[in-house]
Amino acid sequence: MKKEKTGRIISISGATVRTDLRGLTLFEKVSVGKQNLTGEVVRLDKDAAVLQVYEDPGGLGLHEPIQGHGTSLTTALGPGLLSAIFDGLQRPLDLLTEMTGSFIHPVHLASSLDLKKKWEFTPSVSIGDAVEPGTRIGFFTEGAFQHPVVVESGRQGIVKRIATGMTALEEPLCLLDDNSMLYGYQHWPMRVPRPYRKKISPREPVITGQRIIDFLFPLARGGTAIIPGGFGTGKTILQQTIAKHADVDIVIYAGCGERGNEMSELIQEFVELVDPRTGCPLLDRTVLVANTSNMPVAAREASIYTAVTLGEYYRDLGFHVLLIADSISRWAEALREISCSLEEMPGEEGYPTYLASRLSSFVERAGVVETLSGGTGSLSMILSVSPPGGDFTEPVTQALLRTAGTFLMLDTGLANSRHFPAINWMQSYSLYQDILSPYFQDVVAPEWETLRRRCREIMHREETLKEIMEIVGIEGMQEGDRLVMQVAENLRNRFLAQNAYSDDAFCEPRKTLEIIRSVTSEYAAEEQKKGGTPK
Ligand SMILES: Nc1ncnc2c1ncn2[C@@H]1O[C@H](COP(=O)(O)OP(=O)(O)OP(=O)(O)O)[C@@H](O)[C@H]1O
Ligand SMILES: [Mg+2]
View 1: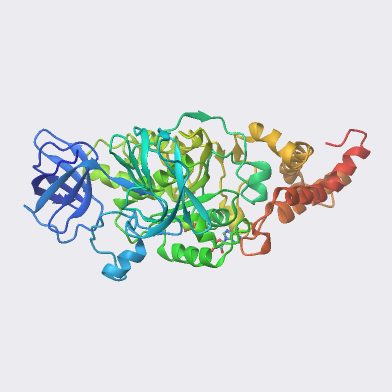
View 2 (view 1 turned 90 degrees about the vertical axis):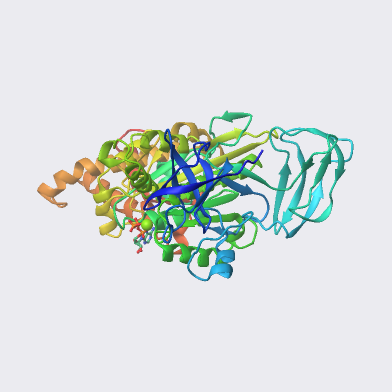
């Protein structure tokens, strides 16, 4: 039951506020001050609670009221999310602009979803049917998207009445025999992973359309890739290109502490670009969560949890979801700032000691699952990291390295020479390669693995020959070695490089294979001549 409690502000330090309000619980949602700013309880002391305010705390004064909500911060889930753009607290930006103009001011919304809007509902259960967690009771038509409505965990009964046709979210969809109602939307506590029957090992890839990723460092559906890269190495462009083309049903794009103009360009492009699978604008399969650098720092954490909860929701409806977050470092910096103002004992480089566990419990929310309905859904993640000074030994990169399966290291040297995507092919890796190999061999071509090995061999040989070439020059090298250098150059320019601003931005696996076959054919012929079997 919702219980509301009121207390007073006893001190303020930036976005951190102390209150004398008793009886709060950790991570409980609170309303702070006369403006009702949204905040969360982050520490409980003997006679005070410490709150983190997620909106601009400017104007807050001592002794202003604090109210506890008895619930944690939640994410609204239901039809109307797709193509929406939310801030970190899941408030639709178009609605905020309407209410407060171009700059965000404190606004209190009852729900992030429009509860009055009517949607076409097609039921799939009838009066007298038994329903339990996971039962699909029908679907809403949301443009070209069929939005299933599934019974939440903890609810069950016999259907006494079921809605059909145009229905608003505030109207009940189904009346059960115990006179409780089922609605077409729900609010889920964002820090709590959503339930599923069981986790399944990943077996299929997310086709990103980036040759170097799909061919050399594949990402599994349900897996996690991290993209660490120094300033301007192409993290944002790579993530945005993948968001546009990846072979998934739903994309959740979280801009966390990054530039606002990049986000608005992305939105513009998504409206114009067409999803080749449905013929509808790309935005129709996308949810954007924007907590850009000019928005309150503390809300970065909320934006990350909102995004992952949205991802899990679609996963539970049986879809393949890709969560893209740019950048995790900005979230970690917010954690450092909060921890510092709480005067906690600092860990490495001033980050809180719980940094690694906080990041890994977030990454753990990715996966392929058997949903409560018995179907399969997946949530994959692509997370960028911006290590200060391009130093990959820093704590955020290291913490994510331990949990992520695909590591795509961006190289400043490659970016400077305008080789994009600037993924370093010697230092990146994918732990999913072996489990995905059978998929590529069955679905694309049996020689996928052979060609991949050949490609790797050429890259390694080039690496060793480079030093010799520096000493003797290309003319002084043996003919065979010269060929290796020539093929490696073609490999870099025609295969590994991919311009995000051209038609080459997406390359499907069959074409990837064709290009690699053609680029390495001379090398293969030479190897065969040498007497060995072609590799
Ligand atoms: N795949 C690509 N194709 C062509 N150009 C690219 C590609 N990736 C990056 N670039 C170029 O590099 C520039 C910087 O890229 P981007 O903004 O993605 O870097 P970043 O790593 O996100 O930078 P920051 O650290 O500032 O966030 C882009 O403006 C673009 O000119
Ligand atoms: Mg960027």
